[in-house]
Image (cartoon, rainbow, N blue to C red; front, side):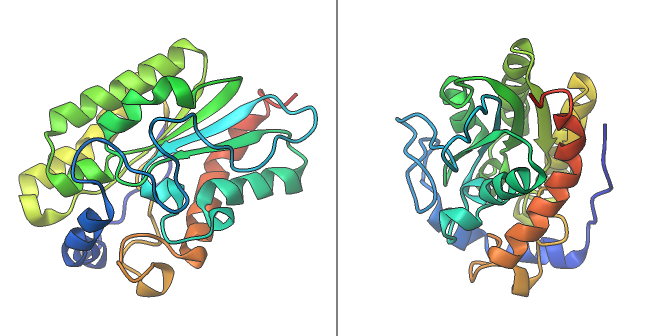
Length: 241
């Protein structure tokens, strides 16, 4: 199920051209994630965004990289935390788990999937691929990793939301197009809920991003969270206890 269409404006591409070196500097140089502000170590279970509300058991897990972890933000301003606040405000008893690790690739996310899916997970939001694109990793590898994540989550009867990402144009138009298409193909093949671009409405807008030009600031995170809430809310009725 596709929700909305990706805007391919030149300012979005310009943001990825201007800042890839800054983004790579903020990431680990290999597929092994490193801990950063707002993130957890890859050798420990995922940290919960907030203490579990009394009686709540079902979890919403955000499996991602620094965009999920909230690089440069206090943890309470990261997207998963904003979703947790909205759940509380709506009286929906779910626990949000921020399983975002700065520098993580799709391979890194797959390697820690079992930890991330610990407990009663109702929904998995998959936000991975930005670092694959920044490093020019093979598109086939990205697809295999994400496909395995989706398959294993679905085997546990977990609802999956797949969010798309854009690759910087540094590697040429063919790579950029193939990279973008991976997410669309996976959404169709696995019939999962699909958000074409995680940073829709935020990428390329200086006032909504940190100084690196890639990671949303507090205002940008609110926009991302609002978009995701519109996708997430309809899925929660069948899981709410």
